[in-house]
Length: 292
Ligand SMILES: [Zn+2]
Image (tube, rainbow, N blue to C red):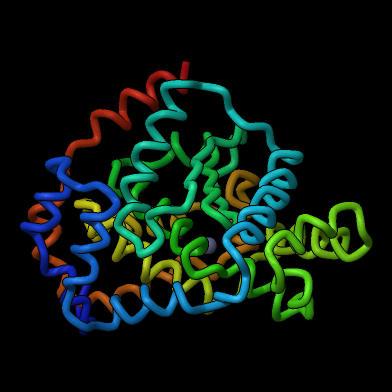
């Protein structure tokens, strides 16, 4: 990777080490985040809090519940306590590095051989069993989770609804969204959500989630190259492979995402590669259990 990127707040190797040592509760993470110097990444994270701030957390959560129900209607949740616990611990750890650590984050595994991951407003993130079995390292999985967490903290799905003229439904008094249950407006909203999961978000949102996903995974102590590495796996896969079909149809082409990250990251994050966690033994263990 070459070129330039000012992700100076990430020059916090010692900080990552301290976080990994288990000293971090939400407040500490928030404090550390607040102490970061000004940078693109910090502005990006702060911008996330301001975007669509007229949507209350309750409404966001209600939307997320509906969207998750749609997802789960198509693919059941995998009930595997060890794997669920693993994905929740890893996902929560990465989410704690964001400026929305206090969301009620929930991470689930979809019983689906396809390779994909999904996010829904309010803190819902899902990865498929196929994805869990395909990643080669915990850093790769961290990169994917970082990307999905970024969609949540940037409220990308909420913004799509607003752009499509459903602003009234997703903003306003607390509980307004919930009161729309069973109405034609909500049915229209659900159609929109279905469309997002089959057609994807805006490309700009995907690129933004890649960028922020790298920041979050790196901050969590994982290799900044975890996401690029998994994108290389996607790039090598055949777009016609049924396992990858939906992923390809809902995201920009992997090579475009890689090129963009390459330009942004350059070699600026190489220092983090050296100190990143290389231990994927927990992932291997879960993969062995899931493959049985
Ligand atoms: Zn995405």
